[in-house]
Length: 278
Picture 1 (tube, rainbow, N blue to C red):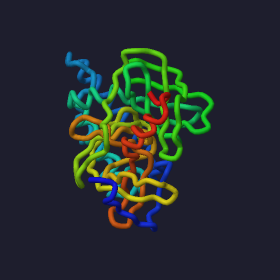
Picture 2: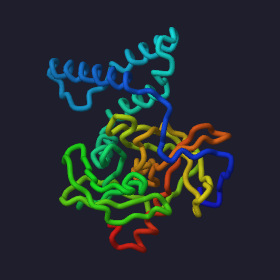
Picture 3: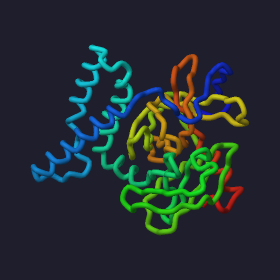
């Protein structure tokens, strides 16, 4: 699908900071506790504890549904939010997803957190401009390599992208597509740090392109469970290549709540114009 296939609706409401009205603290505590139980069980049984298949997710579903039914704590547990954790747990048993996750980083500064992903072995990282905007200090955490201080190498606020650089070598990285090409309803996967979790893999489909107010170029619309903290998540196609970067959500009149992603060829165009962008 090319950019001429635009879907424009000026009454849609963009949600740039990916705010999701969900009270997640109690859910997170339960998930952490049950995840630790599963980890300890695998360890006691002599199995490799890394990324165990989380049987506890079914208990979480039962608990959440029970609470919703009796309405003791209304709106505290979101079934869609639980679903995205279930999907992530299943995807994380796939060695390919496991490999992708190693290239996705947590970007922290002051009291904020976002997502980025490595694009070279020598420490270049893509994220959103709004993730690093006005930040004095930036720290980047790789799942395996650990924590690094990062510098902003290039920033393109007009397409909400930025490039960071950390010192080091032999970093895992994701391959970028030469252009953003897809058909409607093509499956995609994306990995990020939503809510208070890190390295959450999930899946969805591409709806198409849409025009946004104050944007000169159309952006991708995704039918996908995207939450706060997913800003900067790579959108990965069936070929294992990054075709977009998540930056916002949208309340669309036809499709409901959807994700928005910057097509990766916008970055390719900026990189051609700016040698500092890796």
